[in-house]
Image (cartoon, rainbow, N blue to C red; front, side, top):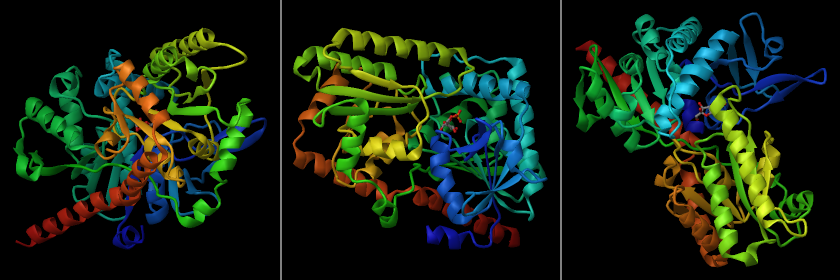
Length: 491
Ligand code: F6P
């Protein structure tokens, strides 16, 4: 963390993302601050706290306008300012087309190959382009020097790098794609595939979570654009400018000893969570914690629980799934339909095994604060991350960080980027319901010594490859490329 800080001492750092680190909303006449459920925010916020700089992001809360100065700036975190958040205002029409339409109705299902048909509309594309222009203009307006370090986050802003490059040719632009990149055939469905690729290739570096996504991206570029690709250097040259394509597995802030000292004990967390749910002290809890999204494998997880309870009736009355599903993108039909499907499935499973007040599934369709999430991680026997496709997934890393008792079993989808690093989790193919049910049984029967060993190993991986390593690797590559450019300019 401190190395990162000193490396960036003389740089101007500007980050742009759709999602903001802090949302202000009006509740009962008061303004309350909320932290959005977002892997991007979980990862990027500690970096800005450590390095400072300016973060440009959409202001989506109904009280956000009351918190900014005349330049739409606010200092964050509010109790101990470390960086500047510049809010960008997107009107309802653009939000509908850019965020709900093109980004989340088109690119999201396209890149996750989630068996939800992507929707591409000309009008959404126009909004997407317009909002990208807006972000690019905001970045350019914030630049005080000719070569700032600019971090563009995610699929909402694929066009912005080229737009920025045209005005700031010397800037170092790092784009990080937080979701999977599919194969060329799948990506080729998008009517604006060339424009998106061109936009992204305005970057100095394009980062993905895994090598596999880098390979898919390079093959996609090779299929649809006339470029020069140097496989051995993982570089694409387009319009006379090289772009490095590299994998940087994202991670979390590893809690310090001081932070851990403030946590309630595991025994207290176990007791309090069970008491709140009206469960006895021995009740087994499998935890699922996601945005309420069809890519997270919530259906498959519930089906696996049903299968397990059918095959192992002695677990009926003893094991429950506690599923937190934070509402997200609710204006989209697919998300509304998915919510109905999950609520019905949970009700059916609960009815099927109901006896003496037992509930197989506790479904909470609400956003939980950081403390409650932490308590749940520490109270659970198993954590289920069964995404049908996920760029990385940070819930599993947060679960690992929370378990300083070195206990608890992680069941992890082989289709989450995290599975490449977290080999000591129990890996499952979420489409294979029986396999997930068997993994749950194995987790419940796992001897304590094995649980410890697995958790110790997982903890050392996440502690080592924390979010500062993620940012450090990207910024280290950027520094190397900047130096190379300077040397070449002298020749
Ligand atoms: O990590 C992928 C991502 O889409 C982020 O871009 C985003 O912040 C997060 O998931 C949550 O989604 P949303 O911002 O749409 O609420």
